[in-house]
Length: 233
Length: 86
Image (cartoon, rainbow over all chains, first blue to last red; front, side, top):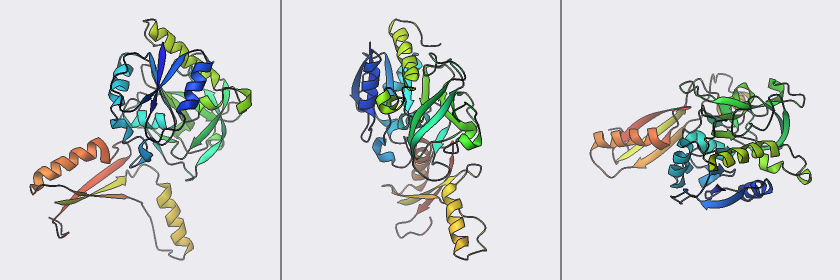
């Protein structure tokens, strides 16, 4: 059972994701974006960075990389597919998750820890957490301002920006995201994306271990999928 | 054949760049500026003289890559080689 971690030109969080997944007990392998066969893998993570330089729009070019045909196939088969930061942007551009990520409300790159509240625990990202849990996780992005697609209301909010007590308010919204949305899942629950970086919050040395429960959720879904059970949770 | 595609943020989606430039212009004393919107212009050279086909192709390009319909509209202009509108 191995997770594919995609590498586009400009990805820069892929080693952190591999480290985090292996720390949680699952094998993970870097896979170059031109790969056309992911049949040996039981799940996919699209990590953060600046795929293809973020040219035109974030994720716009990455969406056409050959590996995305396989990511789409796996998503359709129920395999866990997780996009973190730039990976989330790619999944929205690819239409695997609804909405779009715009420049932050204040046009500033945000690089700090934020609090997020778990809003749903029926996704590959949150199944091991409890609704209402508050997690402290680093946010590192310029285009993190989540905007809904009125034509495609299929997504489900799984994480919201909140204060440390779990209160979701405009004051706790770092980037202008609609409804403080920090992470969503598709209708089936096996495709999810979030802007904060759980892989950077997996060890006390990094200042927080709150990202573990999210990646643990993903790993649990990958195990189920590998064992032949669908990842709907 | 040359063409331009003007990619415009949909009116119901905030344009913080435009808002920042508007504030800057007002700070400079241009108090009559009512609104500012930052658009993108993409210039293409398409190797065909068939304007209709070029336009249809560019429509496809916009739908598939050049614009994101969730947040953007687009307008295509075909230009002759000398730059005039066809």
